[in-house]
Image 1 (cartoon, rainbow, N blue to C red):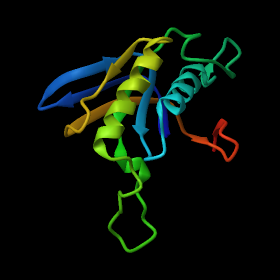
Image 2: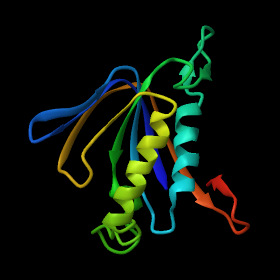
Image 3: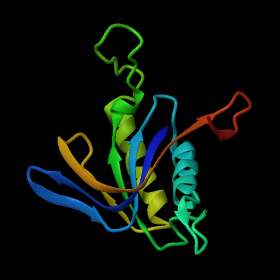
Image 4: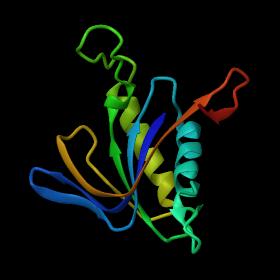
Length: 155
């Protein structure tokens, strides 16, 4: 499971011209799901996103997490995070999870994140327009995987 995280001053998502999710300061999380992902990987990644210390403390150091600053999370499904562009110029998306699995794990990720911080979200599978004011900018990619021994880690 991949999460492209952007620290934002504000962000919103629209579907059909209507705002369906909006946050003030916090994290915009673009979430991609792989076929081998499961709920435990999603829970691990949701916890890492909420606890990632990328907000400045009183000394200007990135030392505070989303939970520390009482920020919110806007979660958007993003299967294109698994695009393979090694062959030709047209991306191949076969490395992304099938829609049924991806939606189930997207919903699970949102529930897990909502246990720590306020969560807004997009609409799975919809044509969405996302706008944001990137803060910093700070943009970080996290990828949670299960290693050979079965332990969930970041790659």
